[in-house]
Image (cartoon, rainbow, N blue to C red):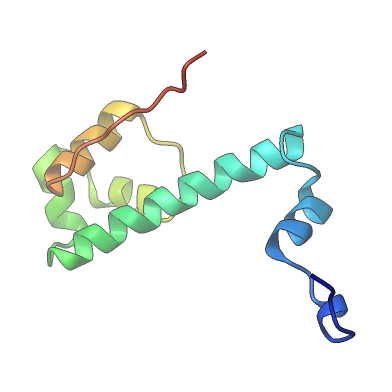
Length: 103
C-alpha cells in the first residue's frame, strides 16, 4: 500500500520504538520491554483494586504489608517479589498463570 505525502510523515509506534531502543531483541529494546511490562502490571493491579472499591491500605492489610509497599508496586517504583505479587493478586481475587513456550 502506497503512503500519500501526509502519511509519509507519520511514524508508527513500532518505528519510534526501534529508533529509540533499537531492533526487537537488542539489549536496550529488551530492557525497555521489561520496564513496560512492570509498569503495565502496576496499572492492572491498581485498576483491579479500584474496581473492587479497595484502598491501598485495605489490600496491604489483607496480605500483611504496609500501604507504601502496595503504592510502590502500583507505581512501578520498586521490583516486587513473586510471592508478594502472588499475594496481592489473590487479595484482589485473581490468580497468576505462567506460560513458557516450548523449546
